[in-house]
Length: 402
Image (cartoon, rainbow, N blue to C red; front, side):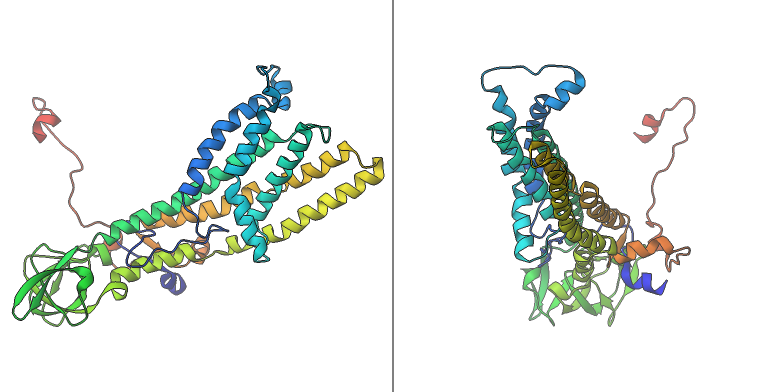
């Protein structure tokens, strides 16, 4: 249990995920997602989805399978080419550009496999459209592949973004201004202007602007949002106070000891940010698998080419088999399931008050059979709430509440 306690921080019942606060703007590197955002996948996904529908309608395979004939009009034969080109260049651009980055770093991975699959499908289909080769085009495979991959990566980025939004809410625990004491009088200054050894006045009901030490006054401070302990903590001269906690009924004079990145609140947010940047064994395994699968896919495609060429010579049938191998080599589940599950699990943990410092802790958690909690604030909110209403037959619930 000691290892788990060092890797997982508990934050009461407060929602904490992945925030941007006083410098926490770095983004997680999720299987090639460095620098990516939700918007990079959301808009291309919807456009690709809309364009994929007519591509599927005009796909010969679906017409034969469901026994219908797609509407025909001048130029309709080129409709899959036009729509497929938009899907490839617009929807698939994020994968193509990321693949270039992987190749520049001599580390082909998930994005390289996706780019290889959609590029092979597109080039081969264009060649068929303009009569360079004969066979069945792969426009519908291209369209669905790009759309599905965009959906998966959008969901992953959305989960990460949700975590970031929750941490932004945590950052709001800090007040915008503080009352700094200068030569016996108080002046209102931005919290960012506070420095170590500054003296501030914290009035009843106000949030403490930075970590510090009480030098005068006595009060009860609510630290539930930081420690999870619902019972207010008595503070008097010499006691430490934490930024973001709420002062009770008394006024406190506090000497600032830590500001900005050095505060406990920033440390909590930094832990979650590091968790988003950390990698699990499953992710490392997926990345290694993608690295080797790239070469395996190319190798199998070459073997397919050689084998069919020897068996029947190089023709359109052989070329179609080679293209098929490269297209189906795209690891849909490998590329989507692992990063998506890890991102969502981190977010759900944070929303339930558990800050995951290292994602390896999530994998180790499956081996736990006993969990020890050291305070009630971890399990309860310490807040009263209405759970039921009992009324007489002549008075309804609405009347009782009025």
